[in-house]
Image (tube, rainbow, N blue to C red; front, side, top):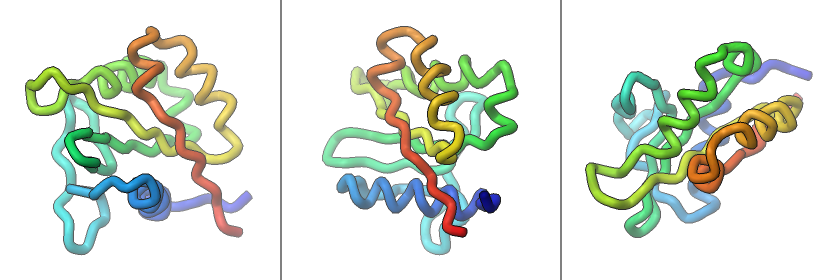
Length: 127
């Protein structure tokens, strides 16, 4: 399976946002949009909104799954409140096709509130 670049993963995640009706506010590697600010101590790849809902997008690689901090990263980003209001954000996690089962296992080990707010997006490499 061919390796997919970080920029291609972010492009596919933003395409997924667009398909779901979200408007991308900021993204990495964007030509016309600004790079998103870090959320807490964590880098994010894209931020979008749909009506009054806010979404954060991150992409994961195989190396990210080996990092023990992935649990705290996903838990923090999935429970982050939008602009200090009572609204929560949805976390879209772009995962390579061959790591989907591993991602599901990690997400199932998080608390129930975090699990409800995380949506997995399968990143398929074009080879």
